[in-house]
Length: 186
Image 1 (spheres, rainbow, N blue to C red):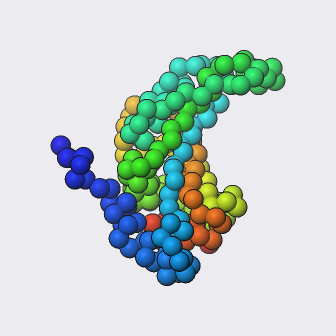
Image 2 (tube, rainbow, N blue to C red):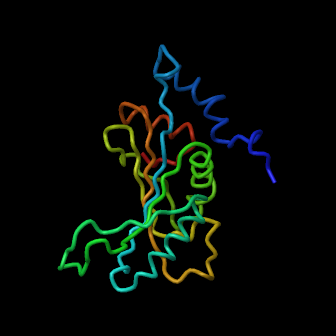
Image 3 (spheres, rainbow, N blue to C red):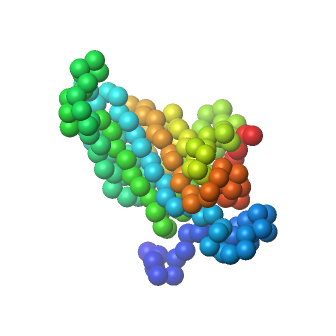
């Protein structure tokens, strides 16, 4: 077992040793606190089939917990929508917010293990920024993560991954993620 006091995630060490210096010279920051850094990573799974079978939300939450290494929270409907057969407080999905060491560990596994396992993968869109330095992407299959046992999966579910930074604009955030070896197409 690893001693948590001595262990530092690989991407966190890379950020502190090389990425910060590269970003400082690239953008000409005068103060180290101006250098963009990762704030959090939010993982979200919406389970559309939950309207018919609420047990699917629980299995999705268990899978998301295995992927993230942190317990997933089940999300509920805020209000009833008759057209979608949704009632108020009905479980519809799950989410996890990762910060600190778990965030860096997940980003490392996402970039080095999960994304290369996606079928016909050519890179992630470089235009998926929101204008404030946050990057959003979606995966069509949760089985690209090695934590998920392919034989025990009942249904293939997609997931949203939102990487939040404290960058002030998209160019700084994209440069930060490029230094983390995010495979952008454009």
